[in-house]
Amino acid sequence: MIPREQEGHCSKTPLERTGRRENIKAFIPRQKEYFPHTKPAAEGQSSAAGSMFSGTTEKIYKFCLLFSKILLTSKRPFTILLVNDRSPSEDSGMSDTKETILQTALRLFARDGYEAVSVSRIAAELGITKGALYKHYRNKRAVFDSIVERMYQIDAQRAGEYEVPKETYEAGPEDYRRVSIESIKKYTISQFEFWSRDRFASDFRKMLTLEQYRNAEMAELYRNCLTAGPVAYMEDIFVQMMQKGLLKEANPRQLALEFYAPLYLLVNISDWSNDKAKSIELLNNHIDRFIQYNAAETYERIKL
Image (cartoon, rainbow, N blue to C red; front, side, top):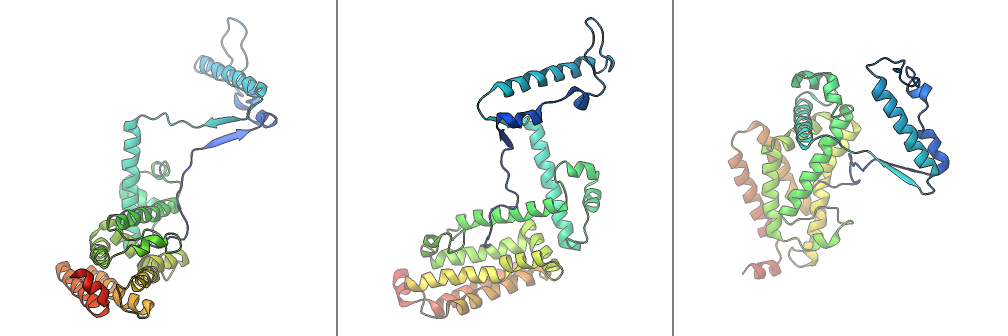
């Protein structure tokens, strides 16, 4: 589980504007400012802007005036919502493009480092222009924030699937009290496979590993996701297991270090080894030995 101090790197809310009558005048279009090439035409004549724009521009101008009058005469606060007028197929296309940008950027960050990869480099790798990329992400930082947000989402989903806590102990203590030794074993094995085999997670881990010594924010993410964070997470779980009589009384932080260290080591070894099955076998043996030495008699009776 990745400890999450703050919610939402990329949280989005509907864009709304609310205001009072006295503030409405700021939204009223003025013909000279908004339509400098257009002036009301005499009856039966074309607008001075020419036939190409005359009809459309004049209609927009009249609509804005009418809308402004309605707002000025209203005594109630008003709300303006931006409406998405794209078709579902267009939205789907944009989502596919955004996902491709995200995956490609992360692959480059993992290979060359975040600082070394520019927006131009990402666009060139994709075979698109920088302008096309900016339609989906306003800058490189926005891409990075989306990557981190995706990892938090995946992490929470996986925790739910394996019935282990999604949040820190302070945020959800009851979830820690319900954890079983069996769920921890299954979740730990799945974490090895996730961090070593899943392309997105593996690239995320490699990016943080590369940048942790050059970027303070990356260093903090590295600690939260891969070192100090998981150890603190397991420590909180083991405290609750001791209180329930599932584990023998011991120093919970020491137990957390002993439990997590082989997982961390094997994940990193897997980057250079093709025999991941052997690593999983070693990890399984480690977990079984850990349970054998640290499980309380209460747990043994429950198993029987």
